[in-house]
Structure formats: C-alpha cells, structure tokens
Length: 408
Image (cartoon, rainbow, N blue to C red; front, top):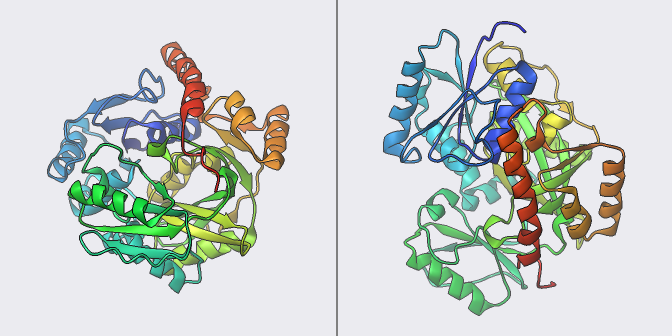
C-alpha cells in the first residue's frame, strides 16, 4: 500500500460517520479519526477507525472551531487533514468556521449564503422553481403569526424550515415530519412548536400519496470548481417508520433516469454548489412528476449506495482536495444494486409494493445486496455482536411503528 498522504477527520459517530469511514478504508486503507459528542454503536469497537475523540458540547458554535483547531494542532500531522461533516448542524458549523479551519483542514462545501438558501425551505423552494424543478404544493407559515392555510387538500406534511433551530428545542412528541389530516391538527402542532421557543418558519405541504417506494433519492458530487463529477438515482424501498425518524432511508434500489439526473445536476451547477449533495424527491402519480423535497448539503446516511455502485464518496473528495484530480465529464451512474441497513427479513415483510418486493427478492437471490454495516474490512467481533442485537430489535421497531398505519 502506498504511503498515506492524508488523514480523514470525520465529525460525528453515527451511521453516516461509519459509512464514510468504510469508504475511506475501502478506497485507501486509511483509518479516519472521529470527533463527536458521544460514542454510538455504529462506530464503537470498529477496527477501521484510528481514534474516536469525544468533545463535550461539540455542536456548540462557541466550542466547535477551537475544538477542531486544537485537535489538528495536537495531531502534528505532516500530511493534509481532510474534514467531513455527517449532519446538517456539523456541516453548518464547518461552513461558518471555514476561515478559521481552512489553515488546518481541507474540505469542500458551498458558501454560507448558498447553505442558507438550501437549508431554509422557505428560500429553497422558490430557488428550485426558478430553475425549473417541480415541488409539492407548499405554504410557508411564520411561527407567531395567525394561521392562514392555503393548502387545497388534506392530508398535509408539516416540517420546520430550519431543522437546526428546531432540534435545539426538544419537546415531548417532537417529530421530524408531521402528517396531519385537518386544520385543527395543524393548529395544534403549530401551537406546540411555538411553545417550544422555535421562531422560524414552518413548511406545510400537500402530502403526495404513495408508500415508501414513491420516494426517490439522488447523490451528486460537485468539485471545487463547481462541476458535477457524478450523479446517481435510486428508489427508496423502505424508510424508518418511527415518527421521529421519518426520512431516514433503510433500503434503496438503484435506478436510472437521465432526464431527472440531468435536471438535478444542472440545478446544482447553476447555483454554484460545491461538495457532496443528497437530493430527496417524491414521485406524484397524480401528474406523473418527480417533485423535489429538499437538498441535503452533505452525503446522506444512505448515500453509501453510490460507493456500492463503484463511485466511492471518499474517493471523490480525496482526488479533488488531496490529489487535485478533477473529472472533466459527469458520470451518470447506472449500476444495479440493492442497498440496505436492515436485515433482509424486514425487507421481505414490510415492502408492500408487489413489483418492488419481487425486485428485492431477485436482487437478494442474485447477491446484489450490499449492507455497509457489515463491511468486511472491519474485523471487530464486538461490533458484529452489537449488529446482531440491532438486527433483532428492528423486528420490534417496525412492528410497533405508527407512521404507516393510516391509509391516505
């Protein structure tokens, strides 16, 4: 193996952090350093991680910058440090502290202005429409103002436009996304969120009908020159069904749609975006259109399926930021795989779309299923034991979940 010419530093200890650690290790044989607030099972005991350092209040803006610069200084590294965030909040902190961190780390993220446009849904949706992307029927509600709901039908989805601010204020019954069936339900949820102290806007949208398989996903990398180097496309097979975790995908089948992939690529290039991006969409059978829900300014927790398709996420960062090798053309990925982070029996039992279920069974039988949590380069027996317990718990989690109980 060639001498290591960089050190990855990953901010986070969750599933996303493990996927990125596995990507670095698989591509370069390098063990990343992790910084986080707490030790989580996904990365605990792993043999592919050099070191995990826990920092109290790491997600506090007053702590974050100095914690990262101090860590870099303690490493005394003779090679560049490559910095990767794994959550919206950590990415925001990296971008906000970019000037402070740039002398010690290399990273690729968009500007703070563009970050704000992408993360704040009340600015993102007009931006998306301006560039020709379709979105669900949407109403923006300013918390504290009278409710003037303009949505034409129920049910609706309600979610915060500013997820970072929303999760700073924990409260009983807090959900990532609310599915609501009347004006009274909308008013009650708004009142609860307002009482928490949240003062930004809320997004209230037409709920596009369809089960998990109507949700779609795309991962892209735009290099430091703003040019897209790859774009893929996938159909969600299953997502988490606990109300607090809706939007976290547990299985994806890779797909190919050149028209949609080109639209997403052109949109991000036109906005001046750089770095990894993860786009969430939902297919609306009522008008046969893919509608964009959001752009995550980072890789998602399920974005590893691009690595499984032969487009290693860590590899794009390393080649751009460390080796200064940029691709001159965008790769439109068309490699068939089934990505999952749940046991196969969960897929067999809870995927309700008959056509997708048949395809899942085919891909399993053809051994085209990939679960990065069981990365073969990780030799930890303790971690394997934790994964076995986690797998058993998933049966109970899906059996007791309430998100899919009400038919729409």
